[in-house]
Amino acid sequence: MSDFKEAWMALESHWKITPADNRISGDRSYGFMRWTLAPFFRMILRVKIRGISNVPKSGPTILAANHLSHVDPLVVILASRRKTHYLAKDGHFRNFALASFMRATGQIETNRETGGSDALSSAAVALHANRALGIFPEGTRSKREEPPYLLPGKTGFARLAAAYPEVPVVPIGLTGTREFMAPSKHKFPRLWRRVGISYGKPLTWWEWLEKKGDLELLQALADKEDHEVKAALAGMFREFTDEFMERIRGQGAP
Image (spheres, rainbow, N blue to C red):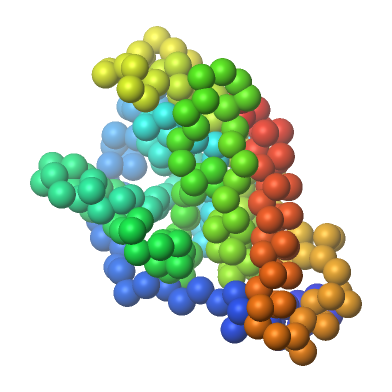
């Protein structure tokens, strides 16, 4: 184990995320839809895919994309060629038809009112089960009327990457989804508009830490008070997030 890894593991009590008790449903139905409906929808949506080889074919993975439209999760799920799970607010599970679809595709119900820690615990369920987790680091859909649409990232996804430091995080740039179906503007998708998705090279927390981390600072944190450790880790999560948002921008995110 490298010095960086040893120093990081010594702080485990400060960054560990315990997966929630949720179970991922819909394995059989999701698999059926992936192999039968996904190719059809990829053709209908006219999705231009680049860098798909950067998505690991198996194992826990975080797929981090910019967020422009309601259709973004669907585009990522269809293009990535992996079972991909998103956190979905509990309101989506109140309508029977929508709830049936969400469960059939293995989406994870979460209550935003319970706070970020519960959301991270729910997200950890997918990674703990060796699945792909889809996430939008911006935390919400961009409502900007003009480019650049990309918002500053929230640090929650960095906390997730840090808690699963061997898990690859893939930067994804989505283009055209706002024009395909703009929120509060288009009731139906405009099928003639082209959608693009570009996958960049994955990055793990270990790789980032070895390159950007301060070994002496990490080692010293083991003897610091809780509030000092919390402040130092918050700074690291912010730095990781800002750097990763630039990676998403580098994949063409407008």
